[in-house]
Image (cartoon, rainbow over all chains, first blue to last red; front, side, top):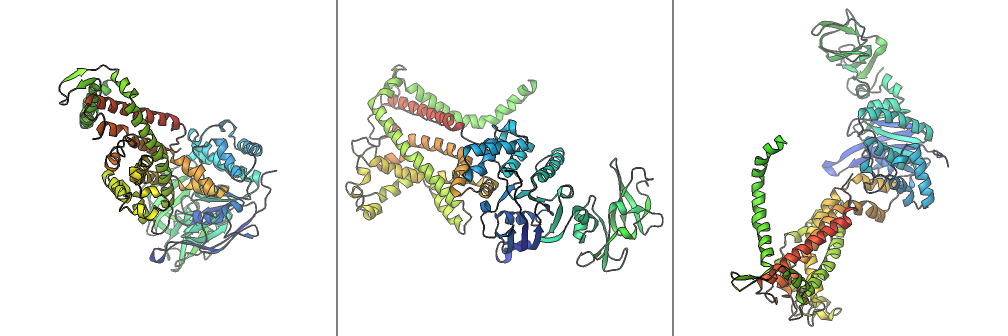
Amino acid sequence: MAYGAHVAQVRLESVTKRFGEGDDQVTAVDAVSLDIHDHEFMILLGPSGCGKSTLLRMVAGLEDPTSGDVYIGEEWVNNTQPKLRDIAMVFQSYALYPHKTVRANIEFPLKVRGVGKAERAAEAQRAADVLGLTDYMRRKPGQLSGGQRQRVALARAIVRNPAVFLMDEPLSNLDAKLRGDTRAELVDLHRRFDSTFIYVTHDQVEAMTMGSRVAVLNAGRLEQVGTPQDVYDFPASAFVAQFIGTPPMNLLPPGVLGTDDVQVGIRPEHLLLTPGGRLQATVTQIEHLGHEVLLHAESAAGRLVARLAPSAALPAMGDSVQLDADAQHMHHFDATTGVRVS
Amino acid sequence: MKRKLRDLPPALLMLVPSLALLGVWTIYPLARAIDYGHKRCDSTFRNCTDAGWDRYSQVFQSKQFQDALMVSLKLAVMTVPIGLVLGIGLAVLADKHLKGIGIFRTIFSSTVATGVAVASLVWFVLLQPQIGVLADLLSDWFPKLKNPGLLNDPDTALPAVALSSIWASLGFTFIIMMAGLQSVPRDLYESAYVDGAGSFRRFTNVTLPMLTPSILFVTVVLTTRALQSYGEIALLTQGGPQSTKATTTIPYLIYGNNSVIHNDIGTKSAAAVLLFLLCLVFAALQFRGFGKRVHYGN
């Protein structure tokens, strides 16, 4: 059987999850509706505590929704046990059994499903081949590096050939270099498996580089769903505008460039040193990053960051500068609700 | 090397309190016991003659010691596995996130604050043939509870002592197992659950393996406690019932008022040193036997 033979979209309809009771009640996920297409690599992105992991856990069946409906394929799965949902999950901590060998860890999901010994061994070997773990099959997780453990966790997920892969910040325990390498491998894995991936992260770089689409969550609410480029170019709210992009978008207080009921946002790469520009500021810091220069400046509208080419004529620290942006690169958000106006 | 030498005086200074306590309460008495073990003394313990080091071998091979050793081993066999199973069982039950579970945790762990004397007294009263609640309630099914009473029958005296001992140790076992359970990452259970493992499989594949350090620790402690059981024997059966020696463990043989070697400090010391060695050997065997199966996390 080839990997990725299943077809599975995941549909969430007004899914809400509340924890606690009475005054202590907390709404972790608030009426989220989301269609995740078949074979899609969907990223659930948001800051800590925004409800993205809770949402993933409801898809997995580890949490029951307080209200709303969860569908995998055409099946309503609110009351379906995780083992019957045709999903596999990769945890942030990898959740490998420390007392079992790599082989036994990979075989475990098959063993509990009553798959015969020979078939188990063959499937585990196949998964290990895909992830380059063949030489480590007899080792225990404690004898592996972080990256290798992460691969074992992935192998344990793919060995069952599930319809949907759920991943809860699987790269967050890796160092920066390994994280970069593994990002590319995960994208490759998704391409080879052609399965539906739902991937939780708070790291916007992971979201931008890996996802077919990104769902941005804030305080339990879904702020925006779109391709990474859409979310970057047309943020649906001031929150998304500031959350996506490094450095974040400059958000000017209402009335500075426009009317009193609108906040204007400008990406650092669109904020230009412009003689006669409308934003007067004093340079407080200049960061040379090699391929670009980040110019930090203090203005009456607050702190501003401009991304400049390294070849640009740079002011000195403490210099007074004028900054401005083209109208087409200005994003307008409602001053009260933060929702995009234009 | 120079630095190590320079660190030695302050290190020794800091170790003095621990070394002093260990020396006064453990090493010195042990050395004295080893010394007494090959001596024959009068009742004042002041006039002693050398009885030779083979005294240890003679004591070990004596009928009294062999009988007491068997009783001690039987007590260990009765108390350790049952105590472990009950401790793990209660801990697993109390680990559930249910409303009011804190009350049960307190109840289950309460015996840890109960001394051997109190526990023995409780069971002495419970098992009393005339006034004991258990005798009143269960004598229809177990007539021995009334006549002659579990503690008065040579066949049931040791199991009755074991019952008291298990109950007294249960709080300790429960607390250690609870601590062990709480340190098991929840992700492991969730991962197994997502993979399709039912509760029994999660218990055998996650709980038990992750509890092995606690299980090893409790096994060693409970075995040592069983081999060193004295208080419950002295209070419940005085090594008897009557002259049967059915509950004369090695510690009772050494310390008990009814012991046949009551006034023989040399033999008592030799038996005490042999008991120490026995505990040491058992602990070493348990560490060696179970050590490879014990998993200390990742």
